[in-house]
Length: 134
Image (cartoon, rainbow, N blue to C red; front, side, top):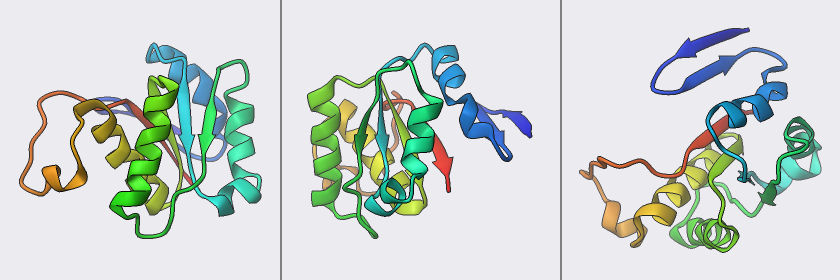
């Protein structure tokens, strides 16, 4: 296991998902939305993250799709906005992570995806994201 200091931290290695709760608390976060897909939810992977965050109020969004569309990102954004979440735990491969990143930006900065067509630069952060790669 390794800990790499960047603007935030990167935890690498087997079993690091077990540190999710302490990572959230160290960042001052207490109400994350777990963003994943149906496959990882049905395989028990999302349950491992829920187990690692036991004692922290979490909710789950598993409606991400391969090659996310603006509509699928908007569904995630709506979930974030309806739950007053302070962070996101993106669980999966690229599509859940891409969905989480886009929805995190939109939930804070508003607008629609087409407003953020490159080149766009942000000086203010979106919701904090913890990415768990499976």
